[in-house]
Image: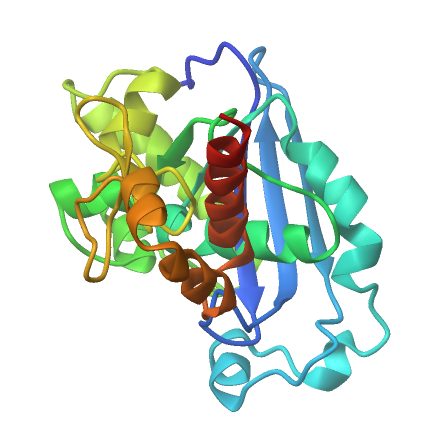
Length: 255
């Protein structure tokens, strides 16, 4: 089934030095951009992370420090990568929990703010887990009846993810071929920041989604307990999350 698109959608996948959104770096970035007319634009970049690749990451991806030593850094590629997402929706496999927050973190480090609100996010893994509950290789076999060769190579993974989504639309009549529907279906919480530390409540107010103040209005907490804001800004939170905290605090100060 062909995707029903009103604007472009970018499928992307990352391979990284490790699994920490705050501390690890991208070593491979692959994308597949689908236009409303069905035309495609794709690419894959190896990236010098400027920090060592963990042994665990190398075991999974096969990418070593030597493989990326002469590659461009993320800072050099950031303008091109940031431009790729402008005016587009975003899709991936486990992208809401990992790839998007980590990409946003990398971009913020070099001065580019990939905010959540302009983009609708479609996580193909969420559809799969709601329907079947398995990994990408099993999803590819189940939906497309193919073996995923070269799993954990970003370019192979992202092409498989795109094929899985199209097959999911064919298989499940209740899935609407509409990015707005898919974005809402694959989002468990109405996140304010990519990491989901803040969400919108039923009245569209921003509340904490973690810790001792979970469920409380962020503005109320900042007003009653100003030191909590300082603790958050000095804590081990993603830059995107801290940026949203600051925006809320600045908005309060401007009132």
